[in-house]
Length: 182
Picture: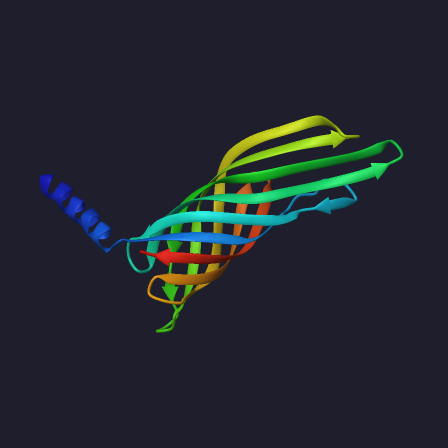
């Protein structure tokens, strides 16, 4: 048993010796798959992400980060006045990330999958008076794929798509990322 524990410890230690930490900033557009039932709806907003992680091998790593998915809303105006519904979503992500180099070029395909701990806040307003509110949270899956281009040994740029599942609402994200490998 002692030999098995020692072998496992050495294996894990060797992973950290080759681990390459990284940080990334992402900025783009989110699109929430939600229908408020109002004639005027806006389900697209700005999204941003800050994350970091470790590549344990050149192709396999983990990431952890914060993401703001933006806000969605709908409004209606009629003879009785005006009403609107809005909600915004944010959360923390923890998952696996890969880097699959395309031959000897500076391009890599970057798949991602993990868990997203989300928080959604919303409100309903009729004639300027808040009549309802929403505060929900949960943990669901996110996944995505992107392409990165290495500008130098440490700096890279990328374009990425990801889907975040918030119970019964899917949020698609298209973004540009900039990253730094230490």
